[in-house]
Length: 124
Image 1: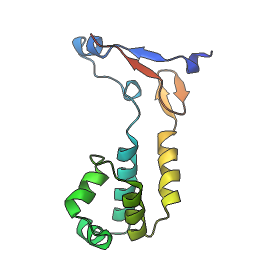
Image 2 (image 1 turned 45 degrees about the vertical axis):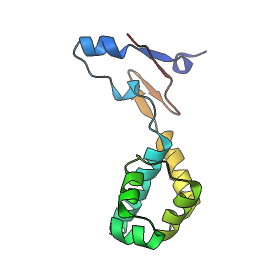
Image 3 (image 1 turned 90 degrees about the vertical axis):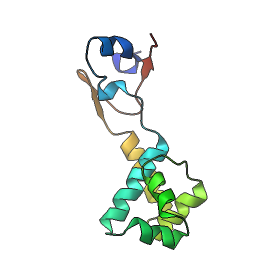
Image 4 (image 1 turned 120 degrees about the vertical axis):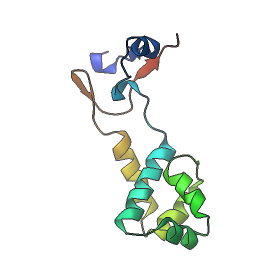
């Protein structure tokens, strides 16, 4: 097992007591629903479309679409397909962009790591 394969153990409580905030690398990977929501929001904004416009096209409330884009709702695969269709974006494009965001290199101390973070959080 190489150093990059070993889990990183971070005691968040100790960091807080020391007045330090947890580093980004210390945090777990974002939820898939959050990543997909960010991609859908970016695509909608790139097309200069409003929440209301896209929501009406899909047949959902703009509040629900907003919650989806912020990663607060866990949309079904049918809902993701509908929003992608409304944005003229193939569902495969959403999936591929999600994988790229989740596997983008991150800095952890002196190492660059790809793939999901290997972090264990210890409760105090």
